[in-house]
Length: 191
Image 1: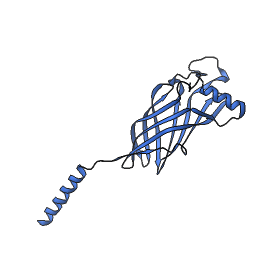
Image 2: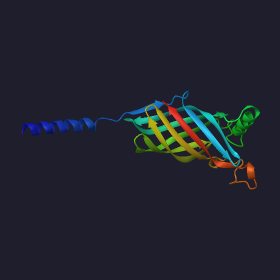
Image 3: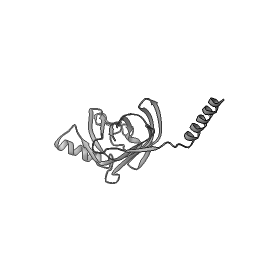
Image 4: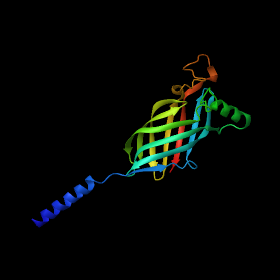
C-alpha cells in the first residue's frame, strides 16, 4: 500500500512539473561572415553563377527542433563568379538594374519561415514567404540542420517578382537570347 502511494505521489509530482514546464525557444543568429548564398541562373546558351551576402538572419529552435527562421539578403552585393573584367562588371550591373532586381529601389530581399515540418532526423520541409523587388510569394524547400550548420537549395521563379527580362513566358522570338525563368540558390549557413 505504501508503495502504491509513493508511485502515485511520484506520478502526481511529475505531472505537475511537466504541466508547468515551458519549452524554451532559442534564437540562433546566423554568422553572416561564414555563411554563403550561391546563385545560378540559366539561359539557352549556358549559365552564370555568383554569390550574394546575407545581411542578417536567424533560426529558431524549441528543444533543438527547428521551428522558425528569418533572413535578410543584401541585394547590392550581387557578385558574378564565373566571369572576369568587363563581362563580369556588365552582368553585375545588368542584374542590379531595373531589368532584373532593381537594387537601387529594392536593396533587400527577405525570407520568413511560416511553417516548419520535421521530415526526419535533422531535415525539415519549410514553407515561407519570400520578398524580392517588393513582391511577396510563397515558397517551399527542404532544409537540413547538423550541429551549428544548415543547408538548403531553393528554386525561384523570377517572373513571379516581375522580373521578365529575356523570359520566353513574356517575349517571343528570343531564340538564343532567352533566359530561363527559374534560378537556383544554394544556402550554407553557420550559426
